[in-house]
Length: 122
Image: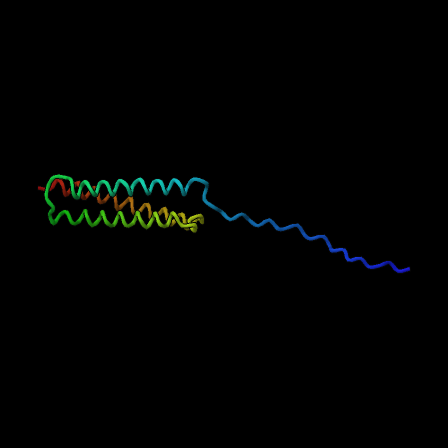
């Protein structure tokens, strides 16, 4: 008597463990977003005071720090936009966003130094 053929599927190989894609630690993006918004709030408040409420008149010297202020604020807005994207979970994108933030901070420090020098001029 012949045995009936059974269709027993061979055991499937265990799934291969895919190497985990590196990601940034939890809380880094939130901290960066907080830092951006704090500096952006400071930039807007200082620009309002320096440009509209501080005593003194606008001179042609005032154009330089005002231009640097606008560049700094624009860089901070771009950085905030980048930090809020989902693609920023990728460490390479996050690193690029941090570099944008660093550039905006450098521009802000330059703005404050130039504004200080400009206010000291006679």
